[in-house]
Image 1 (cartoon, rainbow, N blue to C red):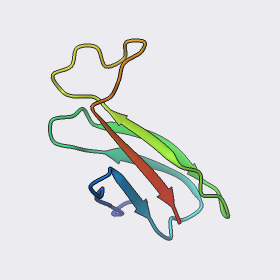
Image 2: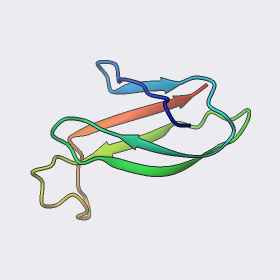
Image 3: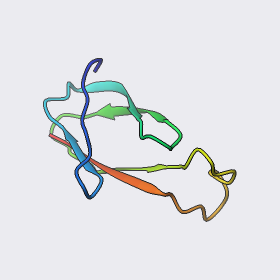
Length: 78
């Protein structure tokens, strides 16, 4: 939903509340990291966790097998 935003806590977790059911685009931004943008579908009554791994801008191997992300965000939908 346009205009919704959240900030991670010190452990990298963030939550959205009252997200309408349906298809949305989730964009994750962090200074020094490549932006992650993905389509998500919110289903009523479900709250599956979503793990987002951000890749450092300076990293040439973001999509390599076995790549370990520099930052991880976990999302809860309420």
